[in-house]
Image (tube, rainbow, N blue to C red; front, top):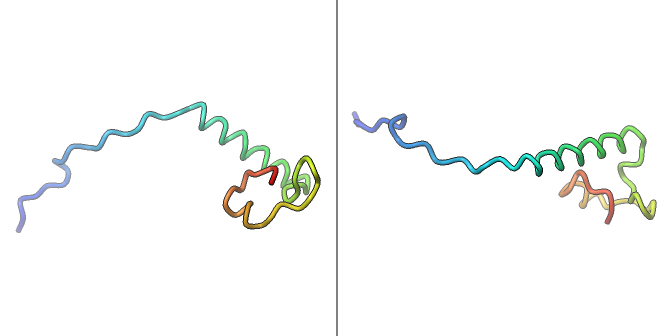
Length: 65
């Protein structure tokens, strides 16, 4: 048996939490959900043209091409 105790290893430092970025992300998600409810999620909010599915797959909160 090994004497190695993983619990005895130091815990890696966590990166500081950027609350402003979290709030921006949350706001983007709320806008995306509202657009989904309104039926405009799949369209560019300026031109009205369809947003590419690939764009929305990579960036679900995208509002423009």
